[in-house]
Image (cartoon, rainbow, N blue to C red; front, side, top):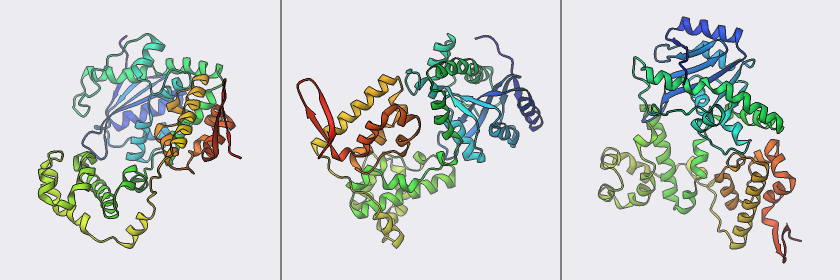
Length: 392
């Protein structure tokens, strides 16, 4: 890699100056961050990298407590923000500062619209579009260490200095295939508050495990997750540090046997039970409130799936994959596997995003109709073809 010039920004005054310069003299920025999320509820923002028409910048958010000039830059709709897998970076800025970016494109999503697979690593994209082979030796670097080492600076700069070149190539390809609007539609979600607001209760209630539990276990499951979330937020611990996810089903099924049984279960770390037994026991034993009884009514029982329905859904999945291959669009970008599986078990569910926009255009009205009314589908086999239609 050629040596790149950059400015290390460690004061508010410098940050303000260069952000104003970028707004006045650059129509785009490459944007990336380095943060530490392990063992923390709120990740620690350690570095921000910005490339632009006036130069490259390494911003030290540990040295600068007020990043307002950078917020303004991200919210400026006249400046294009170019990222790779930028959702995590934007999510962090929303969580820390309630900042919502405007005018963004993501090269990882872009290559997904060009038949290159999704998600694709940054190393792979850089090598394909610039013939540069990146080393990723600093991926798990200690980014809150100061002073910042030269190897860390070089690694951090690599994440932004190639973005504009790559984007220009991808933009031409997308325009040629009439897919630029598809990309802009997909990236617009990064600018919406609803994209970053997690509904924890909804996630708990719709978890598949719920329908296999008895009522008291269901209530305990809800309380356990809410308690873990509260403890993690209060102490700024990761959820896993409070209580590992793999321990939860074991605790749910074993707590009725008492403290000794939980401690003797080698799958659960001893300290979890010794430290939290009184709390766990209270969460299990406490009678349900009226509010909790109403929550339990919202749990959807997992219906059994007939073999015929399973075959139809598998066939629709193959049609789905065929269409994605035909259009050279990554299937994982078009619809998540979890949403497809949810359609198997919930007859009335279909992701709203399939009903409009680029996804609807790719799938076509027939396949969307089949997915919407999959319970009414029938399959006819003849010697040379398979026909899908609706029951009379």
